[in-house]
Image (cartoon, rainbow, N blue to C red):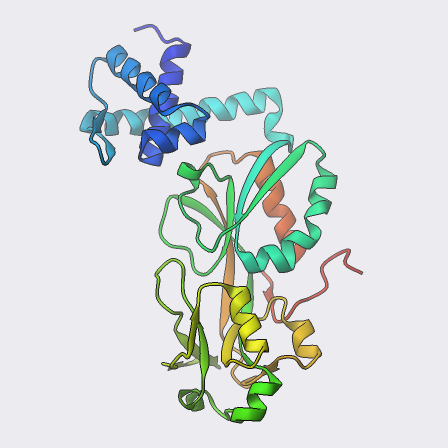
Length: 314
């Protein structure tokens, strides 16, 4: 069977459908219409002489033959793309459209104030920055790289740790004046607490306190449950209750006395920040450049106690 551009294009479209799970999402990734995607797959099936996808009104999934075709073709197409990039020098050129899905706190405190430096360094690069608390489906949504706090879930994404930052338990002076200061973590059971809902699980984050290898869980009651980090912080500053925050970016509020760290003798709990991108043998230069830029901002693998001065911030 002669191999031509139509066969390669059809295989690329088929891979996008399998990886995204639908014709509509594949169309977004490929910049095509859903009907165009469907026709391309139909032509591929006619060309290879076997049905590759089961189609229903609710879902699209690969047949047994389609799964085998995907497993054999996916690495070949990845190799062709990598070879083309290397032959043309594109793998070393940082340019084009980079879609980033980033945690709101990291975007606001670290990335946004310095993103202009990356754009100045690479004039042919343009960045679409989405604030999102969950990684989501990068392939289906056409996202090049995501940045999120927390331990990575098992997936086919490549993961790179950027930093770890301490977890602080804090309150405003106004709250402490009205309700008193808890002397130990267990005293939180008698206080008003502000909880944050984990976007990935839909449940409030559990509170733990770490010291010299000891872990003390405390099932704190909440008087307020929020799903936005900014709202949680503002409510705490206004005296609505005690909350837990990441140390990253909190130093100005602590230094000004607007927030008080309640348990500095329990300093051991840290929370990691990771970058995620789709698994590829050769990630695009724009993705590598973005991750390297983030590492330069925070210091590779450093544990960040409070907001620190980044290189060039003087």
